Length: 104
Image 1 (cartoon, helix red, strand yellow):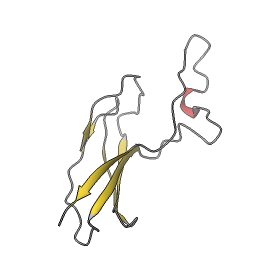
Image 2 (cartoon, rainbow, N blue to C red):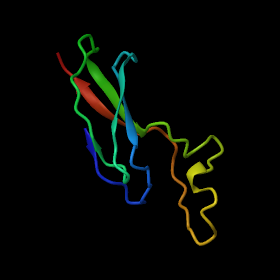
Image 3 (spheres, rainbow, N blue to C red):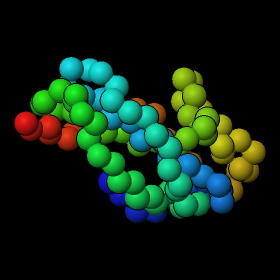
Image 4 (cartoon, one colour):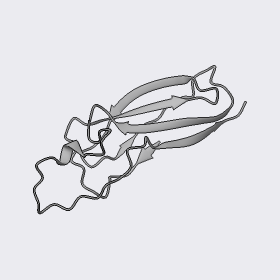
């Protein structure tokens, strides 16, 4: 799986990581791993589907690892103190997932 840099210049930092999680069709978490991510958010991660993964529609998610940038109140914690000159656009805090169909 891959993702390009974000359009919003997120500034994740030189040591940024992405957390990738796979949940199978039965709802079992098959793995969680971290991988390098660049400052702009792009990453590439390859994996083998674990043996024992239930057939059907699995879900893959990828989120920046260990970054608290959107809390339950909808505040962007990374933007605190950005100043009045910065225009912020509120976005969803829902974990992005993509389907992965497992066929035996």
